[in-house]
Length: 294
Image (tube, rainbow, N blue to C red; front, side, top):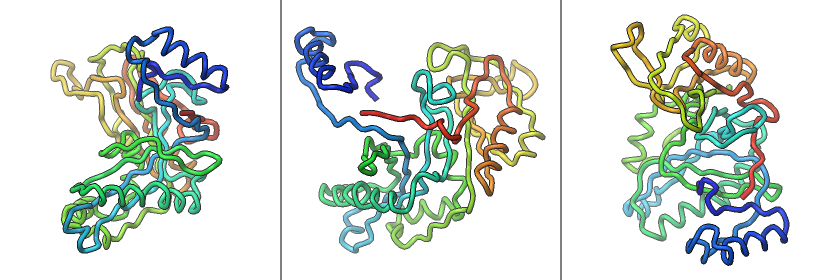
């Protein structure tokens, strides 16, 4: 989140001391280096847990304040296969996760979710919406890295299609503070959502490249295409869709097994083309998840 500016991941005490001297005495980041934040070094793989939230004064008084987690998902941040290359806004997501057990989720609920609800109540929050929990799975269990008060992208494209309930009815339950009694059910299967990006991303990239989508091939795959960095331009002719961002679109597909979902998603990806189009070919596969540190 700090984009590497003034952030040092130190593997040894010597590296840490050198970083302190460089920042505080060497003045590498100017006056900003006169105050430091020292955090634990966490190693593991990240997961994302989206959640529905309903906290108001009335809900607290009636005992109906609630945070309900969705199925855990994983975003793949690195640009290239094998979790290599620069960080991006997300090259694809998968849901659910075979390495996230019921015990891990129980620990997450106890150590992350429930304290968040208690804190919101203690501080008198009135919040009805969503919270995105960014979590690192370490040898000591899940550790909370960040909150976002929104549904995360591209995790949303992998999680929401697995909902076996009405999204609008859930939103009404959030607003009306009946979330605690809302029945969540999920499809039995997997969702894989690779992202197609512009050539050059996450650095400089061109815009305005015509996008061609073989609609019959996408329909045969059963996938849905979620547009992100694109716009409609009448001047191009044909479909009129052109690139307008780094992460252009995601192809999200369902399967009763992970292999089926993966194949369906990449069938859809192969049906999309534009000049410079690029995507990872290993979303959800072994070795694709990043080992992260903080």
